[in-house]
Image (cartoon, rainbow, N blue to C red; front, top):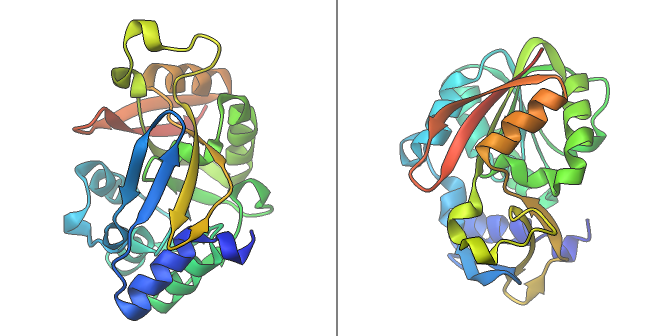
Length: 233
């Protein structure tokens, strides 16, 4: 990644080192601009949504925290649950701060490129399905997850079904309504456009089953979000 486009890293470092409260702006051609409050990435366990709390409490054994950001989830698992956690993110700046905050095993790595490692739990939160990008990438995602999971291991992943945002006449039948394109901006920096997947419960269960996983919905959020547990059959 071009360090000049490491939006999350720049914002996380500025907040942690200088108490800079500037938020990240999220742009999408399909919706109005939104913001990610930077302090939200540094929340404590009791400040997290219930879905995230349930996910963290459900983690067992050796954990891979995917898209760890500033390391808040990893710190809870490491310090409170005393679990063996590896935290990864594609943002070099985020990993730098996660390490400074005390995450012992934090690395700038791409989930899809990890080799010769196995875990009991793969944790993917804050719309964890997003890194999959598009429905076409699901086979690659499930195949990679199988190589990374120990026998009896699981994926804990949250997502949202965005169908509530559309009228029946507005849903594009040529593509899945949960496949979005985003761009991030922060203090004059702009990221490249990237794909981000929101997958509904029924479709996730169906696709998981097609690729050899049993999928259970273990929690429902307040904003059409949910937490799923996926186990290899």
